[in-house]
Length: 313
Image (cartoon, rainbow, N blue to C red):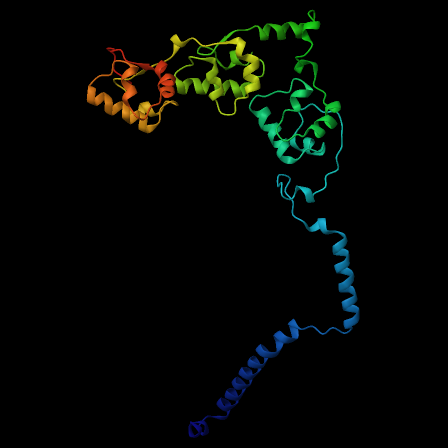
């Protein structure tokens, strides 16, 4: 190797030394440059420590500035201070931010908006106090500020017989609604029923095939018992309008779509029908272990055991 070096020309030897020098500089740079950059020299360590101490103390005085908070995060809500402003408000129109400013927790504001979205209305100040989450103390504090416009009030109407609003309301209360023929517009004539609950009543009627009792409204998810108590006397259910299931032609899939039948009950009816070739009455289903007496009472109005000529759909 050394002998070969002797045969290099002068220019080649210079180039080789230059290359070696560059390599040495590169190695030294990778060792010392990071240390110079990452370890800045502090000229006055005492001054730096004093500034650092002042900064830490200022952070302790303002802990909330750096805390994360979501308006609907109940865990952090206690750490987030909102200036409470008590003022007159209409609970049928105020938004969630407005309820929070009144001192209500975010989840309560959400409950109020959910109630209104489903068609619920606050007709008196006492109705507002029934919202889940509002304590008696909070309600007592807010009640003087609840202002519901006259068109939403339903109390003391009997003392205003000459008032057009009262006449309209009395006419609304006296209206009798037949559940199996009413549309959503008819249902909204009932006290406490808005567009949301009207649609829910019609949707459940379609699933059932019709109502045979007004009490079936309570089977609708989250339907308020208080609202039902107010409208029960204004409701009727004509069972003759029910669209019945042709039990001797229905498939398992069709049967299980009914709210009162699950898959196992539907399959049990189908297998019993195959075995007997024909079912003649609800009494024949009593031998099936999948049904209780209560189950049979509920489904009986929806089953048709008579033979018909048209093809089952």
